[in-house]
Amino acid sequence: DKTVTMKDSGIEWIGNIPEHWSEKKLAQSFNQIGSGTTPKSGLDIYYENGATNWINTGDLNDGLLLDCKKKVTDKALEDHSLTIYPAGSIIIAMYGATIGKVSISMIEGCTNQACCVLNDSKTIDIKFLFYWFIARRNFIISLSYGGGQPNISQDTVKSLRVLVPSMDEQKRIANYLDKKTNQIDSITETINNKISKLKELRKTLINDVVTGKIKVAN
Image (cartoon, rainbow, N blue to C red):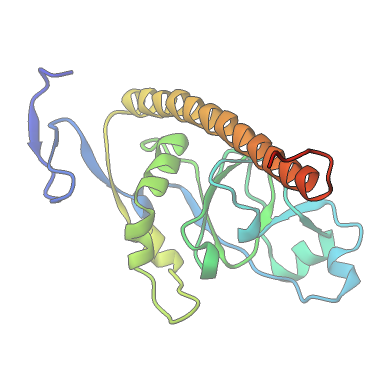
């Protein structure tokens, strides 16, 4: 809307924003923000025949999380007071090489200590925040501490402030980005398929020439 009244966001890289947009602190916007822990490895009572999803940062894929690699038992839930987060939660990685990686979980489950889970907000749409996390990944990583394995804390995530429009506008923005990113992903997949075919053609050509299957003119 080119006619909307604008105001200074107070953030140099953003500049002006619509006047009705407001700043929301994540700690004050979500009723549930938490993490998890790792049941002692090697103990079958915590993992064997487990039925509860146990989400690790390696499962996060910058998209919808439909499954995870590991599950834990009821004993693990009991001994470690693990919280089971509902489907529809957003999960962001806080540690190491995967720091800043994010997913919207479509499955309920608990997590390890390297994940921060946010759920249940009346002011911030989950999909909008998902895209915000991706857009601000470098900034979030810049808040990390540590050497070779940089970390951010749960308190760091809670302290993040997001500039947001109304809930209806957030959903429209998220839907727009869904549509556009899907189009880009489709184009990327087509190009990658063509590249793969060309690489295979190159490999076949070299093989056929060096084994005499193709005659090379003098």
